[in-house]
Structures are given as C-alpha cells and as structure tokens.
Amino acid sequence: MASTIRVRATSSGETTEVQALIQHPMDSGYVKDAKGDLIPPHFIQQLTFEHDGKNVFLADWGPAVSKDPYVKFSFKGGKKGDDLKISWVDNKGASDTTTAKIQ
Amino acid sequence: MTTTHDGFPATRRLMLKGAASVALIGLGNLPFSVAPAFAAANDKYPEDAFKQKSDADAVKALYGKTAEPSDKVKMDAPEIAENGAVVPISVSSTLENVTSISILVAENPNALAAFYLIPAGTLPSVANRLKMAKTTNVIAIVEAGGKLYSTAKEVKVTVGGCGG
Amino acid sequence: MRSAIHFASAALALAALSFGAMPFAVAADTPDPAADAKAFQKFFTEKFPKVKLDDFVNGPYSMNEDMHRQWEEKEQFPPYDFSLDLGKEMFAKPFKNGKSYADCFPNQGIGIRQNYPTFDEKEGKVVTLELALNRCREANGEAPFSYVKDEMAALTAYMAFTSRGKPFDIKIPNDPRALEAYENGKRYFYTRRGQLNFSCASCHVQNPGERIRAEVLAPALGILNAMPIYRSEWGGMGTISRRFTTCNSQIRGVPLEPQSDEYRDLEYYLSYVSNGLPVSGPGARP
Image 1 (cartoon, chains in turn orange, cyan, yellow):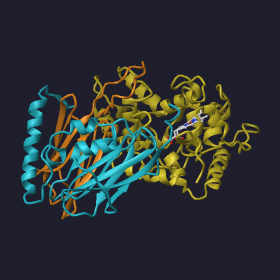
Image 2: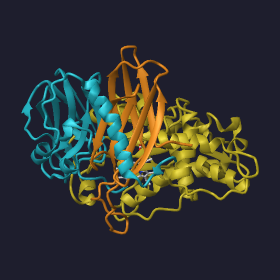
Image 3: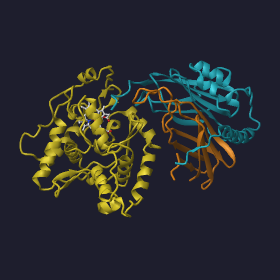
Image 4: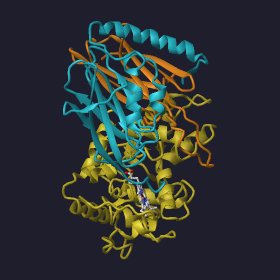
C-alpha cells in the first residue's frame, strides 16, 4: 500500500542526505472552495526523522508550508542499509509513519 | 493509504516527546541557555508562535529574544516566485553549534512558516517549499550557541494566474 | 529581462502582448505537414536561438532562467511522484476479467507514448492516448475515467515515464481523412475565438516567454511533450484534456468536451509539428 511519505536518503560515507516528500493538502484555512466556503485548516504540525534511536531532525510546520510538502537536510553518520524512520502528525491528529533504508 | 486517524493525539504527542528527549540527551554538553518555555529548547509544537501575525511577535514567542543580522546565515530564494503557492527556500549557515533554524514570511497572515530543530550531528542546512501570499521579505533565523542570527530577502510574488 | 505584465484585467494584460504577422499561412495552398513541421521548428529555433531544441519541451521553464532554477529544485523531488507511482500500480493491476492495460497496446504499453496520437484508419479518426486508455477500459468491462485528472493523469504519467527521451514520432498515413484531421487541428489552433478574440497561437506562437500576469507563456513547440503535468496552480495533476479546456476558458471561450473531434485533431496537429522532440512527461509546472 502506498505511504503518504516518500523518502530518498543517500549516504556519502560521512553524511547522509535526506529528502522527503509527503502527500498532504496543507490547507491553510484562508482558501475558499468552489462554493465560496472557507476550507478549514488541515496541515502537518510535526515531522520527525529518527536514525539509530535518535532524532536527527524535527520540523514544526505551520499552514504556510506548501501542499505536498518537501524538505531536505543532511546529518553526519548513517550507513547504506540503515533504517531511517519518518513520522508526521497533523492538526487533526492524523499521522503516518514509514521506515526507509539509507542508500 | 496508510494514514491512521488514531484519535489519540495526546498519546501521539507523548511518543514524539519521547523521541525528541532522546535527541536532547544527545546534545549533551552544548550550551543550552534558552529558557525551557520556548520552543527552541524542547520538542513541543510552538502553537503560540505560529499564531502570531508579525514576524517580530513570532520570533519573540518562539525564542523570547531578538535576532541580529549576520552574513553567516545564507538563504537561497527566487527573485520572482513562479507561483506563490510553492516557493523553494533553503537556509544554511557557517555558524558553529547551530541548534535550530526557522523561516518566516513577513506579510503572510501568520509570519512563522517553519521551525527546524537541528540536533548535534545534523548539518545546519535545510531546504523546503513555502506559500507566500504576496511580495514580501522572507526571514531566516539561525540559533547558534544560544544566540539568534538572521538574514532576509525579498521575494516577488505576482498576482495568481488566470485561474487556468 | 522581459518586462512583466500585471494588470488586473486579463483583457488589458493580453492587449499588451505583441502581435506581429503570423509566421505561417493557414491552409492557403496544398497541405504539406512535413513542410509545416519544418517551418514551425525553424520559427522557434530562430526566435530563441539560445534554447536548445530538446529544451522547448520544458515549456515556460525553457524561456526564463530564474524559473529554470526553480524547476531544477522541484525536479529533485518532483511533485508528480505520487501520481507516477499510482499510475504504475494501476497499470499493473488486472481488470476484473483478468486482462490488463498491457493487452490493449503495442509493446505491452511500455515506451510508446511518443507514437500518440495515432490515426485509426478503420475509424477514420485520430486516437489519443487518453482515449485509447478509456477504450481499453470499456472493452474490458470497466467504467471509463474522467479525462482531466486523477486516474487518467496517473496512467498517462506512467506511460510517458516509460517513454522518456524518445522522440515524438507522429505519423500521418496516406489517407485523405488523416490529412483532413491534421488540417482541422491546425485551423483550430490558429482560429481566433472567445470574448477576447484570441487563438491558441496568439499566446503560444506569438508571445512565448512573455508574462501574462504571473505566468510565463510556453512555446507551442514541444508543448505536449511533458504531459501530463503537476501544476502548482491546480495543486495537482492534469492531462492534455485538462490543459486544452482551461486554455479555452482563459480567453473566455467555451471549452469543448474532452476528446471531442476538434481536440483530438488539435492534439494531432500540435504533436505532429513537435516530431523529433523528446517525451519528457510527466512534467512539473508553476
């Protein structure tokens, strides 16, 4: 089954570069639908990346992050084949988690 | 899709907290002088900072102090956004001991767009895509050694398309 | 740098565009598609000597450097990825009768995007990829998809992806009806319509690279090679059908039904004159 999270994590030996794309509407609460009604806010609030039992990156997001959000960062360490666990939770309490292998 | 509507956000938040405190232990002996009530010092979602309208108020709510401009904070942003809904912005820094990076869009309805916690061992560099309501300054703030450093750049946003 | 045009009224914005003489006569003498395509490509390569031929398929991004950089950033992790994966999954999944899309297409449907639209000599009409996909579904007892987005975009995204880099190779068979379809498509492209009295060519031949409000106009050369596209403006995917209908509405004209004869012929013409340019779909757009 398809996850809402796409990850590319590549190790260069010394550091691991992580890119993630998440499928989420990120509704700001300021936009109207076709009928002219405001679409209520619905956005990811926290996104975490865990490697080797340790948080390597944590994002706190507001509704100004674009639809289907993208983020990129790098951390020291991480070997090919290691697990990277990614989780998000949104303002409605929905969440998703996936584990990706570092390449 | 595997999105779980778990209905127990509190539990979820606890889980996240658990994960992040492990990370904080990892920070060990870094100077950590920020008052714990502020987001920069813990993993709690900074609800209040995201609610502030102006960038100054958001920074105050987030860190409880102000930033000084620094050329050691680098920001890459387009001159004219191809679409205000998706503006690619990346921030990096040559400063030592960076613990967080935040990005604000001055004239958005709520200025704070994103806050990133940078644990020890993570490079002080992040790229993301943000929404911008109109032409305005994008402000990047890097927290390093307990102090705040900033840079800003104006990004032009033209009127939305023809609706097509 | 070209000057940006941001007037509140579309009519005013359009009035500021320039209109030289049309570069090609419309169906004046005997139709000659091969000569058309040559003149068409020559027009664009001479107008934009710095743009490489294969780069025209990147639409507005081929026309503007600041935008090209934003595109490169997007392509690092393109927003059409989700649709592409969905398309791949859908394509592999058998219908209720056990058959699948692969059974409806040459080479199991892989690497064939560049041949569409084709001219079906039995039916005497142009068949686009979107149409062929829905016919495949219907022939196997499945309900057709909407032509404009979602599933149709996902399927065509996957089929385009398996054909990336292959040059467009649209054929006009020796059949007077095929030539007529081509000529109809061409006429449609150059005919003015809508409240604003614009033709497709007014924007995409005479003013590519110019800004019309926030948007940079794509050149007509290679304009379908990146389809389907994820458009930030739509916040999602759209097919060729979606793009045609939205462009018609843009000039306050009445859009036709997706896959109407006119649109099929139009796609046939636009694809034929882009022969030789590579498939680059799915694409990302502002």
